[in-house]
Image (cartoon, rainbow, N blue to C red; front, side):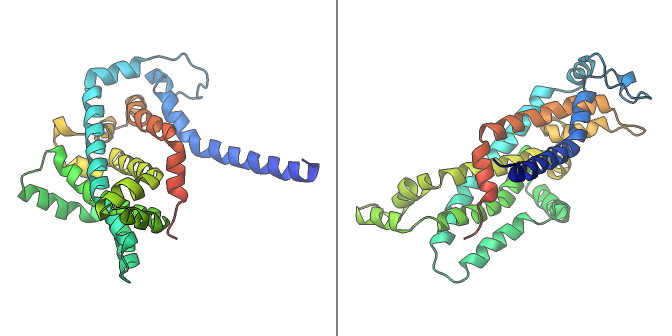
Length: 273
């Protein structure tokens, strides 16, 4: 590499690292707060060197049932993702193989459904769940997430199936497969990366959801995203508790995304063709 190419490349990498550090600095501060004694969190001048302690985590385990909170979050995220895929993947396939001129518009309509602000639909959803007797249950959150996320999955899988040559399924139909067998045995395995990426998005959406679980669940069915609100008092914020809870809220989902990172990136960069 010549010097004329090395210098701009080094400058670009340095700029990206600086921007990454700038945006990750608040998260680093919150993470280190969980290991600081309460008296050192807002000490003046600030102490950049401190002796780590697990007192904040001990307090969290005394006040919260952490494993139940994580289990409820996983249950909501897992059920929401499963039913969203169950509805969204076949819908995306049907739209991709439809010859109707409005198929593209319907796919974008599904995307628009997912972009509706949560607060705008809170009262209608609350009244609906109250009328069917699901207020206070995590099932109400799963149903709402399923409706919103299945629309997103339909739009996303529409792009994957649309980029898949229909000749593959036509060959399967010629060999004696019926339409569902061609979808299940040929089309679906060919877009496996899209299914995994859609699953990750659904899990992320459900895991990070706060508004609907806050108002639609009761104390024993609230996920960990709602438990984070407990760190906010009437007079101040217990930053140590918030930092400790943030560990349990972020580590599981970060591990999942890191494990399936390449599918997640591929899902982000795949668009309508």
